[in-house]
Length: 301
Image (tube, rainbow, N blue to C red; front, side, top):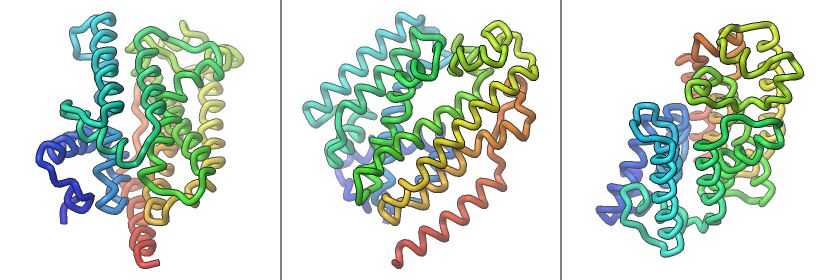
């Protein structure tokens, strides 16, 4: 039985929308997509739908091949965002991504404010190029990452509201790991996501980063950021056990692979300017194999 049928998604246009969300996930979120394969078939389409919504908004903001100006991107994002929030209120959508998105949010009664927060952060990306402190960065990260974890919890299933706090911490850890890996790419977009005051403690400023030459000061600054990712990952770990048993292997694998990005940054000697830290195929295979075994066991317990 295919995933959509397993999830009870029968209507042709709705199936098409879910299929498009899955395509976006498989094409752009390879690690995330790998983790979703560890979920029961009936849960996967809903995760794809949430990813599709987030990816579509992100593409409006970050597509470097686009000829749109910042103002035009802002207008496009505002138009699409407003329509999505109206569609949520109405409980239906004619948008190719929105159909599956609204269906998922409605089925799992996911609070609409999570999506408003996410869209607010996407809007910030069009205007804010740096953050003076970690506290300032958290306004952005709450919407871009913490709420992603909160959106996922109802789909994954949980026995305790305490899972929400862990979901937020793990989402933040994923985002911060990406910031560390993507320092060079973010500079291409004119952005710095590492807190400026923390960089300054190590003698690093914007000009130093923009020279794209790895220095001892930058290495020490990155080490501080990596330590925070690992702390958040440790703090979030107990909350994974509060999820439905069949969902736990997926999130454990995602935690290992996403937070593992910082291990790969260390392996390339912290040179985030000339190299892209990537989880090796061998590590992906190892993590997936362990998670798959746990998935099989969970289905028989």
